[in-house]
Image (cartoon, rainbow, N blue to C red):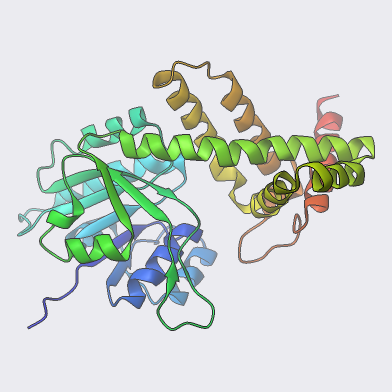
Length: 319
């Protein structure tokens, strides 16, 4: 007799959470979420993946065998506190532990702070994690082949040791356990993101400045001739970035903390990168973009144009 698969809770259902939810549903996992206070767009995404909706965090904590936290970095701590509070409200003991896997883009110090929240709750096992790569996606013209990100995790608890579907879930989600302490997984995510999202911030500044100087076509031409891979990466990063910029403001601050606290470098560089994404999110039309409904910034040229317009409006406001 085949053992039933685990129930997986996901908080929340953004682009990455939705992709992981669809992947799990494709492998017949029951996926539950609490989106009672979220937007209609979030409810639409949840319905598109046939997720089971629960009315509150207590029900989520009771039903789930695993909870994946995939929220904007600014919400990582408060989301963990929600689950701690919900777990403490439950009168009866669980027959098996609940695994809380924090997959947010946060520094090792932030991961340690979150791990400390769970210490008074012995029924929950905390795993530090990070996601490297784009959201899972079904490969074209296939029935059951998926592209998957790498889910790196660390800590004393390993997913494969979980009694309910642990090994199978580890394989489905492409989980790699890299260390027995809290911090290495979130730190690896920070080091990886510093190169990719850091480069995109450089491209934003470069292409926008070239647009304002009237030499964007010449910049692109020279990149194509002398550094074609740089142009390809820059343009790809520019057009995919707008819907995510608001999340990356805090993520860049977490990277600044990581490189300072773990690497010994000054925070200034990635605090500056954070400011770049703040301009995108708060001062330009690009900040209104949503993955499922793109209007602006669908080309590198329009990203530069929209950024320039936002910078001009910001100057007028401050004068």
